[in-house]
Image (cartoon, rainbow over all chains, first blue to last red):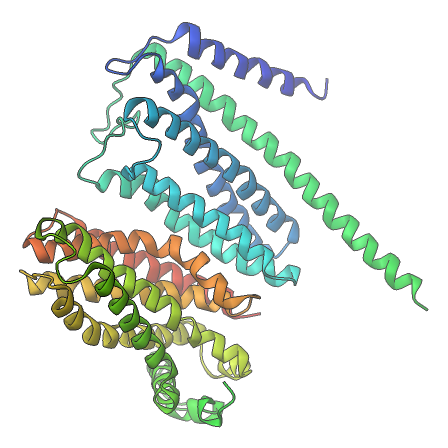
Length: 229
Length: 249
Protein backbone atom coordinates (compact mmCIF):
# COMPACT_ATOMS: atom_id res chain seq x y z
CA UNK A 1 0.00 0.00 0.00
CA UNK A 2 2.91 2.36 -0.65
CA UNK A 3 0.91 4.25 -3.21
CA UNK A 4 -2.22 4.46 -1.13
CA UNK A 5 -2.16 8.22 -0.87
CA UNK A 6 -1.69 8.60 -4.63
CA UNK A 7 -5.03 6.86 -5.18
CA UNK A 8 -6.55 8.95 -2.43
CA UNK A 9 -5.32 12.08 -4.21
CA UNK A 10 -6.80 10.95 -7.54
CA UNK A 11 -10.09 10.33 -5.81
CA UNK A 12 -9.92 13.68 -4.03
CA UNK A 13 -9.26 15.65 -7.27
CA UNK A 14 -11.95 13.65 -9.10
CA UNK A 15 -14.30 14.68 -6.31
CA UNK A 16 -13.28 18.33 -6.75
CA UNK A 17 -13.88 18.16 -10.52
CA UNK A 18 -17.27 16.49 -10.07
CA UNK A 19 -18.16 19.03 -7.39
CA UNK A 20 -17.15 21.91 -9.65
CA UNK A 21 -19.57 20.82 -12.39
CA UNK A 22 -22.38 19.12 -10.50
CA UNK A 23 -22.54 20.40 -6.93
CA UNK A 24 -21.48 24.05 -6.88
CA UNK A 25 -24.02 26.66 -7.99
CA UNK A 26 -23.24 29.28 -10.63
CA UNK A 27 -22.05 32.67 -9.48
CA UNK A 28 -24.26 35.69 -10.09
CA UNK A 29 -23.58 38.04 -13.03
CA UNK A 30 -21.29 35.63 -14.85
CA UNK A 31 -21.87 34.73 -18.50
CA UNK A 32 -23.09 31.15 -18.92
CA UNK A 33 -21.14 28.52 -17.06
CA UNK A 34 -17.97 30.60 -17.00
CA UNK A 35 -17.82 30.91 -13.22
CA UNK A 36 -16.95 27.21 -12.93
CA UNK A 37 -13.40 27.92 -14.08
CA UNK A 38 -12.89 29.47 -10.64
CA UNK A 39 -12.45 26.01 -9.13
CA UNK A 40 -9.41 25.39 -11.34
CA UNK A 41 -8.04 28.86 -11.94
CA UNK A 42 -7.78 29.91 -8.28
CA UNK A 43 -6.13 26.67 -7.04
CA UNK A 44 -3.56 27.01 -9.86
CA UNK A 45 -2.73 30.57 -8.78
CA UNK A 46 -2.50 29.58 -5.13
CA UNK A 47 -0.46 26.52 -6.05
CA UNK A 48 2.04 28.59 -8.01
CA UNK A 49 2.38 30.98 -5.08
CA UNK A 50 2.97 28.06 -2.70
CA UNK A 51 5.50 26.66 -5.17
CA UNK A 52 7.48 29.88 -5.42
CA UNK A 53 7.48 30.31 -1.66
CA UNK A 54 8.68 26.70 -1.38
CA UNK A 55 11.49 27.52 -3.76
CA UNK A 56 12.39 30.52 -1.61
CA UNK A 57 12.47 28.44 1.57
CA UNK A 58 14.66 25.72 -0.01
CA UNK A 59 16.96 28.45 -1.30
CA UNK A 60 17.27 29.94 2.19
CA UNK A 61 18.05 26.48 3.48
CA UNK A 62 20.70 26.05 0.80
CA UNK A 63 22.31 29.35 1.76
CA UNK A 64 22.38 28.22 5.38
CA UNK A 65 23.74 24.70 4.88
CA UNK A 66 25.23 24.70 1.35
CA UNK A 67 23.85 21.30 0.41
CA UNK A 68 23.38 20.98 -3.36
CA UNK A 69 20.36 18.76 -2.75
CA UNK A 70 18.49 21.76 -1.31
CA UNK A 71 19.34 23.73 -4.42
CA UNK A 72 17.85 20.95 -6.55
CA UNK A 73 14.68 21.11 -4.44
CA UNK A 74 14.43 24.84 -5.14
CA UNK A 75 14.90 24.28 -8.87
CA UNK A 76 12.21 21.58 -8.91
CA UNK A 77 9.80 23.88 -7.07
CA UNK A 78 10.33 26.70 -9.57
CA UNK A 79 9.86 24.37 -12.54
CA UNK A 80 6.61 22.89 -11.27
CA UNK A 81 5.51 26.32 -10.02
CA UNK A 82 5.97 27.75 -13.50
CA UNK A 83 3.71 25.02 -14.86
CA UNK A 84 1.01 26.00 -12.35
CA UNK A 85 1.56 29.66 -13.13
CA UNK A 86 1.15 29.10 -16.88
CA UNK A 87 -2.05 27.15 -16.24
CA UNK A 88 -3.38 29.94 -14.00
CA UNK A 89 -2.57 32.47 -16.73
CA UNK A 90 -4.17 30.41 -19.49
CA UNK A 91 -7.34 29.63 -17.54
CA UNK A 92 -7.52 33.31 -16.60
CA UNK A 93 -7.18 34.35 -20.22
CA UNK A 94 -9.89 31.89 -21.29
CA UNK A 95 -12.23 33.32 -18.71
CA UNK A 96 -11.31 36.88 -19.71
CA UNK A 97 -12.19 36.03 -23.33
CA UNK A 98 -15.68 35.01 -22.25
CA UNK A 99 -16.34 37.76 -19.73
CA UNK A 100 -14.33 40.73 -20.97
CA UNK A 101 -14.20 39.89 -24.66
CA UNK A 102 -10.40 39.78 -24.96
CA UNK A 103 -7.80 37.18 -24.07
CA UNK A 104 -5.45 39.76 -22.63
CA UNK A 105 -6.09 43.34 -21.56
CA UNK A 106 -3.51 44.19 -18.89
CA UNK A 107 -5.88 44.08 -15.99
CA UNK A 108 -3.75 44.61 -12.84
CA UNK A 109 -3.91 40.90 -12.01
CA UNK A 110 -2.84 39.92 -15.50
CA UNK A 111 0.03 42.40 -15.21
CA UNK A 112 1.17 40.86 -11.93
CA UNK A 113 1.05 37.29 -13.13
CA UNK A 114 2.97 38.23 -16.28
CA UNK A 115 5.75 39.70 -14.09
CA UNK A 116 5.79 36.60 -11.90
CA UNK A 117 6.07 34.35 -14.97
CA UNK A 118 8.95 36.39 -16.38
CA UNK A 119 10.72 36.53 -13.01
CA UNK A 120 10.78 32.78 -12.48
CA UNK A 121 11.54 32.07 -16.12
CA UNK A 122 14.54 34.37 -15.65
CA UNK A 123 15.54 32.23 -12.66
CA UNK A 124 15.84 29.22 -14.96
CA UNK A 125 17.72 31.25 -17.58
CA UNK A 126 20.17 32.35 -14.86
CA UNK A 127 20.72 28.73 -13.88
CA UNK A 128 21.45 27.87 -17.49
CA UNK A 129 24.07 30.61 -17.75
CA UNK A 130 26.36 29.31 -14.97
CA UNK A 131 28.52 26.25 -15.36
CA UNK A 132 29.93 25.70 -11.86
CA UNK A 133 27.31 23.90 -9.67
CA UNK A 134 28.19 25.71 -6.43
CA UNK A 135 28.27 29.16 -7.99
CA UNK A 136 25.04 28.37 -9.85
CA UNK A 137 23.36 27.24 -6.65
CA UNK A 138 24.51 30.30 -4.70
CA UNK A 139 23.47 32.92 -7.27
CA UNK A 140 20.20 31.18 -8.11
CA UNK A 141 19.38 30.92 -4.42
CA UNK A 142 20.02 34.64 -3.97
CA UNK A 143 17.69 35.38 -6.88
CA UNK A 144 14.98 33.08 -5.53
CA UNK A 145 15.21 34.69 -2.08
CA UNK A 146 14.87 38.02 -3.86
CA UNK A 147 11.67 36.48 -5.25
CA UNK A 148 10.44 36.00 -1.70
CA UNK A 149 10.34 39.80 -1.53
CA UNK A 150 9.09 40.53 -5.05
CA UNK A 151 6.46 37.78 -5.43
CA UNK A 152 4.24 38.71 -2.44
CA UNK A 153 4.34 42.30 -3.67
CA UNK A 154 3.18 41.16 -7.12
CA UNK A 155 0.61 38.65 -5.87
CA UNK A 156 -0.95 40.81 -3.15
CA UNK A 157 0.07 44.49 -3.09
CA UNK A 158 0.04 45.53 -6.73
CA UNK A 159 -3.39 44.10 -7.68
CA UNK A 160 -5.04 45.62 -4.63
CA UNK A 161 -3.38 48.97 -5.12
CA UNK A 162 -4.88 49.45 -8.55
CA UNK A 163 -7.74 51.91 -8.61
CA UNK A 164 -9.59 49.99 -11.27
CA UNK A 165 -9.80 46.30 -11.96
CA UNK A 166 -12.35 44.09 -13.63
CA UNK A 167 -11.09 41.02 -11.81
CA UNK A 168 -13.65 39.64 -9.36
CA UNK A 169 -12.83 40.02 -5.71
CA UNK A 170 -10.37 37.55 -4.37
CA UNK A 171 -12.27 35.04 -2.25
CA UNK A 172 -11.15 36.80 0.89
CA UNK A 173 -11.50 40.35 -0.37
CA UNK A 174 -10.05 43.64 0.79
CA UNK A 175 -12.79 44.00 3.38
CA UNK A 176 -11.57 40.76 4.92
CA UNK A 177 -14.93 39.03 4.54
CA UNK A 178 -15.82 35.87 2.75
CA UNK A 179 -18.86 36.53 0.60
CA UNK A 180 -19.08 33.48 -1.54
CA UNK A 181 -21.83 30.89 -1.55
CA UNK A 182 -20.99 28.20 1.03
CA UNK A 183 -21.13 25.35 -1.50
CA UNK A 184 -18.82 27.19 -3.90
CA UNK A 185 -16.36 27.78 -1.08
CA UNK A 186 -16.43 24.08 -0.12
CA UNK A 187 -15.60 22.96 -3.64
CA UNK A 188 -12.93 25.63 -3.97
CA UNK A 189 -11.18 24.57 -0.77
CA UNK A 190 -11.36 20.86 -1.69
CA UNK A 191 -9.90 21.65 -5.09
CA UNK A 192 -7.20 23.96 -3.67
CA UNK A 193 -6.09 21.35 -1.16
CA UNK A 194 -6.08 18.63 -3.81
CA UNK A 195 -4.00 20.62 -6.28
CA UNK A 196 -1.59 21.74 -3.57
CA UNK A 197 -0.91 18.17 -2.51
CA UNK A 198 -0.59 17.37 -6.22
CA UNK A 199 2.06 20.08 -6.45
CA UNK A 200 4.09 18.54 -3.64
CA UNK A 201 3.88 15.14 -5.32
CA UNK A 202 5.09 16.54 -8.65
CA UNK A 203 7.78 18.42 -6.79
CA UNK A 204 9.03 15.24 -5.14
CA UNK A 205 9.17 13.44 -8.47
CA UNK A 206 11.01 16.24 -10.22
CA UNK A 207 13.42 16.59 -7.29
CA UNK A 208 14.19 12.87 -7.40
CA UNK A 209 14.82 13.07 -11.13
CA UNK A 210 17.23 15.98 -10.68
CA UNK A 211 19.05 14.06 -7.97
CA UNK A 212 19.39 11.02 -10.24
CA UNK A 213 20.66 13.18 -13.09
CA UNK A 214 23.27 14.73 -10.79
CA UNK A 215 24.37 11.30 -9.62
CA UNK A 216 24.63 9.99 -13.17
CA UNK A 217 26.71 13.03 -14.18
CA UNK A 218 29.02 12.48 -11.21
CA UNK A 219 29.39 8.77 -12.02
CA UNK A 220 30.14 9.56 -15.65
CA UNK A 221 32.85 11.92 -14.49
CA UNK A 222 34.54 9.35 -12.23
CA UNK A 223 34.40 6.74 -15.01
CA UNK A 224 36.12 9.16 -17.35
CA UNK A 225 38.84 10.06 -14.86
CA UNK A 226 39.41 6.40 -13.99
CA UNK A 227 39.75 5.50 -17.66
CA UNK A 228 42.69 7.83 -18.00
CA UNK A 229 46.02 6.43 -16.79
CA UNK B 1 38.52 47.77 -20.44
CA UNK B 2 42.25 47.56 -20.94
CA UNK B 3 43.14 51.20 -20.27
CA UNK B 4 45.31 51.53 -17.19
CA UNK B 5 43.17 54.45 -16.12
CA UNK B 6 40.28 52.12 -15.44
CA UNK B 7 42.09 50.27 -12.67
CA UNK B 8 40.55 50.97 -9.31
CA UNK B 9 42.49 52.19 -6.32
CA UNK B 10 44.88 49.57 -4.97
CA UNK B 11 43.67 47.97 -1.78
CA UNK B 12 46.13 49.71 0.58
CA UNK B 13 45.03 53.13 -0.60
CA UNK B 14 41.37 52.27 -0.25
CA UNK B 15 42.12 51.09 3.26
CA UNK B 16 44.07 54.26 3.94
CA UNK B 17 41.13 56.35 2.77
CA UNK B 18 38.94 54.27 4.98
CA UNK B 19 40.98 55.34 7.98
CA UNK B 20 43.20 52.27 8.14
CA UNK B 21 42.83 50.04 11.13
CA UNK B 22 41.97 52.88 13.51
CA UNK B 23 38.54 54.38 14.08
CA UNK B 24 35.23 52.94 15.15
CA UNK B 25 33.61 50.24 12.99
CA UNK B 26 30.92 52.67 11.88
CA UNK B 27 33.45 55.23 10.75
CA UNK B 28 35.47 52.56 8.98
CA UNK B 29 32.35 51.30 7.25
CA UNK B 30 31.44 54.83 6.15
CA UNK B 31 34.99 55.35 4.98
CA UNK B 32 34.90 52.18 2.88
CA UNK B 33 31.56 53.07 1.32
CA UNK B 34 32.82 56.55 0.47
CA UNK B 35 36.07 55.14 -0.91
CA UNK B 36 34.15 52.82 -3.27
CA UNK B 37 31.92 55.69 -4.36
CA UNK B 38 34.90 58.01 -4.97
CA UNK B 39 36.87 55.29 -6.75
CA UNK B 40 33.99 54.50 -9.10
CA UNK B 41 33.50 58.13 -10.01
CA UNK B 42 37.25 58.65 -10.47
CA UNK B 43 37.64 55.72 -12.88
CA UNK B 44 34.44 56.80 -14.60
CA UNK B 45 35.66 60.35 -15.12
CA UNK B 46 38.90 59.01 -16.62
CA UNK B 47 37.12 57.14 -19.41
CA UNK B 48 33.55 58.53 -19.14
CA UNK B 49 32.45 55.26 -20.67
CA UNK B 50 29.28 54.66 -18.65
CA UNK B 51 28.32 58.32 -18.71
CA UNK B 52 28.60 58.49 -22.49
CA UNK B 53 26.80 55.18 -22.94
CA UNK B 54 23.90 56.23 -20.74
CA UNK B 55 23.58 59.70 -22.21
CA UNK B 56 23.94 58.73 -25.85
CA UNK B 57 21.59 55.79 -25.44
CA UNK B 58 18.99 58.04 -23.81
CA UNK B 59 19.35 60.82 -26.37
CA UNK B 60 19.24 58.41 -29.31
CA UNK B 61 16.09 56.82 -27.96
CA UNK B 62 14.59 60.23 -27.31
CA UNK B 63 15.30 61.23 -30.91
CA UNK B 64 13.72 57.98 -32.13
CA UNK B 65 10.61 58.51 -30.02
CA UNK B 66 10.34 62.15 -30.99
CA UNK B 67 10.82 61.38 -34.67
CA UNK B 68 8.30 58.54 -34.64
CA UNK B 69 5.65 60.59 -32.91
CA UNK B 70 6.49 64.11 -34.10
CA UNK B 71 5.64 67.20 -32.09
CA UNK B 72 1.93 66.73 -32.70
CA UNK B 73 1.91 62.96 -33.04
CA UNK B 74 0.22 62.55 -29.69
CA UNK B 75 -3.03 64.47 -29.27
CA UNK B 76 -3.21 66.53 -26.11
CA UNK B 77 -5.77 64.21 -24.59
CA UNK B 78 -3.48 61.22 -24.88
CA UNK B 79 -0.29 62.91 -23.68
CA UNK B 80 -1.02 62.07 -20.07
CA UNK B 81 -1.23 58.37 -20.86
CA UNK B 82 1.64 58.10 -23.35
CA UNK B 83 4.44 60.54 -22.52
CA UNK B 84 5.29 59.58 -18.88
CA UNK B 85 5.39 55.91 -19.89
CA UNK B 86 7.78 56.62 -22.77
CA UNK B 87 10.04 58.68 -20.50
CA UNK B 88 10.42 55.79 -18.06
CA UNK B 89 10.95 53.25 -20.79
CA UNK B 90 13.84 55.39 -22.06
CA UNK B 91 15.28 55.63 -18.53
CA UNK B 92 14.90 51.88 -17.93
CA UNK B 93 16.71 50.89 -21.11
CA UNK B 94 19.41 53.49 -20.58
CA UNK B 95 19.95 52.09 -17.08
CA UNK B 96 20.10 48.55 -18.48
CA UNK B 97 22.71 49.66 -21.02
CA UNK B 98 24.95 51.50 -18.57
CA UNK B 99 24.57 50.27 -15.00
CA UNK B 100 25.67 46.59 -15.16
CA UNK B 101 29.15 47.81 -16.20
CA UNK B 102 29.92 48.66 -12.57
CA UNK B 103 30.42 45.01 -11.68
CA UNK B 104 31.16 43.51 -15.08
CA UNK B 105 34.21 45.75 -15.29
CA UNK B 106 35.45 44.58 -11.88
CA UNK B 107 35.32 40.99 -13.12
CA UNK B 108 36.83 41.74 -16.52
CA UNK B 109 39.81 43.68 -15.18
CA UNK B 110 40.23 41.10 -12.38
CA UNK B 111 39.93 43.76 -9.70
CA UNK B 112 37.03 42.03 -7.96
CA UNK B 113 39.34 40.06 -5.67
CA UNK B 114 41.13 43.21 -4.51
CA UNK B 115 37.75 44.79 -3.89
CA UNK B 116 36.68 41.77 -1.85
CA UNK B 117 39.69 42.28 0.37
CA UNK B 118 39.41 46.05 0.61
CA UNK B 119 35.81 46.58 1.64
CA UNK B 120 33.06 44.87 3.64
CA UNK B 121 30.27 43.72 1.31
CA UNK B 122 27.57 45.97 2.76
CA UNK B 123 29.80 49.05 2.44
CA UNK B 124 30.67 48.04 -1.11
CA UNK B 125 26.98 47.58 -1.94
CA UNK B 126 26.13 51.02 -0.56
CA UNK B 127 29.04 52.68 -2.36
CA UNK B 128 28.16 51.05 -5.68
CA UNK B 129 24.46 51.85 -5.25
CA UNK B 130 25.23 55.49 -4.49
CA UNK B 131 27.45 55.65 -7.56
CA UNK B 132 24.72 54.15 -9.79
CA UNK B 133 22.08 56.41 -8.26
CA UNK B 134 24.18 59.54 -8.79
CA UNK B 135 24.90 58.47 -12.36
CA UNK B 136 21.19 57.98 -13.03
CA UNK B 137 20.25 61.26 -11.37
CA UNK B 138 22.85 63.06 -13.49
CA UNK B 139 21.33 61.43 -16.57
CA UNK B 140 17.82 62.45 -15.47
CA UNK B 141 18.99 66.03 -14.89
CA UNK B 142 20.18 66.18 -18.50
CA UNK B 143 17.51 64.11 -20.18
CA UNK B 144 14.26 65.15 -18.50
CA UNK B 145 14.42 68.88 -19.36
CA UNK B 146 15.20 67.86 -22.93
CA UNK B 147 12.31 65.41 -22.95
CA UNK B 148 9.90 67.96 -21.48
CA UNK B 149 10.93 70.46 -24.14
CA UNK B 150 10.99 68.16 -27.16
CA UNK B 151 7.87 66.15 -26.38
CA UNK B 152 5.98 69.14 -24.93
CA UNK B 153 5.16 67.42 -21.70
CA UNK B 154 3.09 69.88 -19.67
CA UNK B 155 4.32 69.51 -16.08
CA UNK B 156 1.97 70.99 -13.49
CA UNK B 157 3.55 69.82 -10.24
CA UNK B 158 7.33 70.04 -10.24
CA UNK B 159 7.44 68.54 -6.73
CA UNK B 160 5.76 65.31 -7.89
CA UNK B 161 8.07 65.11 -10.90
CA UNK B 162 11.14 65.44 -8.69
CA UNK B 163 9.75 62.87 -6.26
CA UNK B 164 9.11 60.42 -9.11
CA UNK B 165 12.55 60.93 -10.64
CA UNK B 166 14.37 60.65 -7.30
CA UNK B 167 12.49 57.67 -5.88
CA UNK B 168 12.31 55.89 -9.26
CA UNK B 169 15.99 56.51 -10.00
CA UNK B 170 17.02 55.32 -6.56
CA UNK B 171 15.01 52.12 -6.93
CA UNK B 172 16.49 51.45 -10.39
CA UNK B 173 19.97 51.93 -8.91
CA UNK B 174 19.41 49.63 -5.91
CA UNK B 175 17.82 46.85 -7.94
CA UNK B 176 20.36 46.94 -10.73
CA UNK B 177 23.34 46.97 -8.35
CA UNK B 178 22.35 43.63 -6.82
CA UNK B 179 21.44 42.09 -10.17
CA UNK B 180 24.62 43.39 -11.82
CA UNK B 181 26.64 41.62 -9.12
CA UNK B 182 24.80 38.38 -10.00
CA UNK B 183 25.10 38.83 -13.76
CA UNK B 184 28.81 39.72 -13.65
CA UNK B 185 29.60 36.18 -12.46
CA UNK B 186 27.53 34.41 -15.13
CA UNK B 187 28.09 33.87 -18.84
CA UNK B 188 26.41 36.07 -21.42
CA UNK B 189 26.35 39.04 -19.09
CA UNK B 190 25.03 41.68 -21.45
CA UNK B 191 22.00 39.70 -22.53
CA UNK B 192 21.30 38.28 -19.09
CA UNK B 193 20.94 41.58 -17.24
CA UNK B 194 17.65 42.78 -18.81
CA UNK B 195 16.15 39.30 -18.43
CA UNK B 196 16.89 39.19 -14.71
CA UNK B 197 16.35 42.85 -13.93
CA UNK B 198 13.16 43.77 -15.75
CA UNK B 199 10.73 41.61 -13.74
CA UNK B 200 12.18 43.13 -10.57
CA UNK B 201 12.20 46.68 -11.88
CA UNK B 202 8.87 46.70 -13.73
CA UNK B 203 6.65 47.14 -10.62
CA UNK B 204 8.88 50.06 -9.70
CA UNK B 205 8.49 51.42 -13.21
CA UNK B 206 4.69 51.20 -13.08
CA UNK B 207 4.64 53.19 -9.84
CA UNK B 208 7.10 55.78 -11.17
CA UNK B 209 5.01 56.19 -14.35
CA UNK B 210 1.91 56.65 -12.22
CA UNK B 211 3.67 59.31 -10.13
CA UNK B 212 4.93 61.11 -13.25
CA UNK B 213 1.38 61.12 -14.59
CA UNK B 214 0.46 62.75 -11.29
CA UNK B 215 3.03 65.45 -11.99
CA UNK B 216 1.32 66.17 -15.30
CA UNK B 217 -2.24 65.93 -13.99
CA UNK B 218 -1.45 67.88 -10.80
CA UNK B 219 -2.58 65.18 -8.40
CA UNK B 220 -1.84 61.54 -7.83
CA UNK B 221 -3.72 58.57 -6.44
CA UNK B 222 -3.45 57.84 -2.77
CA UNK B 223 -0.52 55.69 -1.71
CA UNK B 224 1.43 55.69 -4.98
CA UNK B 225 4.42 57.55 -3.54
CA UNK B 226 4.23 55.52 -0.32
CA UNK B 227 4.23 52.26 -2.30
CA UNK B 228 7.11 53.43 -4.44
CA UNK B 229 9.17 54.25 -1.34
CA UNK B 230 8.13 50.96 0.22
CA UNK B 231 9.35 49.07 -2.83
CA UNK B 232 12.62 51.04 -2.75
CA UNK B 233 12.97 50.10 0.92
CA UNK B 234 12.22 46.42 0.26
CA UNK B 235 14.79 46.36 -2.55
CA UNK B 236 17.37 48.06 -0.31
CA UNK B 237 16.87 45.70 2.63
CA UNK B 238 16.91 42.55 0.52
CA UNK B 239 19.87 43.91 -1.44
CA UNK B 240 21.87 44.50 1.74
CA UNK B 241 21.00 41.03 2.99
CA UNK B 242 21.67 39.18 -0.28
CA UNK B 243 24.68 41.07 -1.57
CA UNK B 244 27.22 39.41 0.79
CA UNK B 245 25.93 36.01 -0.40
CA UNK B 246 26.27 36.97 -4.05
CA UNK B 247 29.62 38.65 -3.61
CA UNK B 248 31.61 36.29 -1.36
CA UNK B 249 32.68 32.96 -2.85
